[in-house]
Image (cartoon, rainbow, N blue to C red; front, side, top):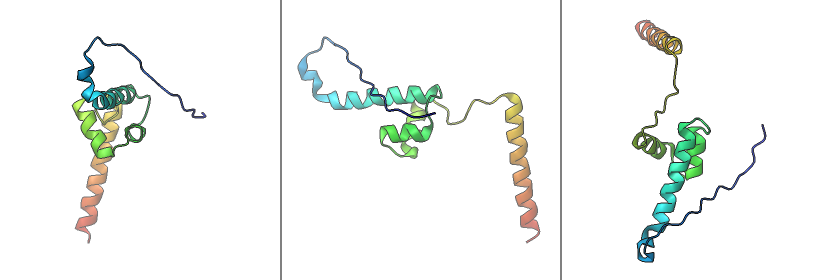
Length: 102
């Protein structure tokens, strides 16, 4: 699937005093964060893509995700989770066996 760039622009009117716009840049940055985090929440973009769009590190994205209540882990069925747990057990068991034979 070819990727195309889409410019997303939000325009809205608020009845506020112009003196309150001293934090306009921060508010615009925050609005962009919320938009990108919602795309991430619904699986429309990856965490890597979200970090790039926000021009932040994956560590900083992790902090934003945590604050927004977005899990870094995919939703798994009970069966998928069982497979993940069994795989982890095998990896740990193999490492223990390797350490014992050194």
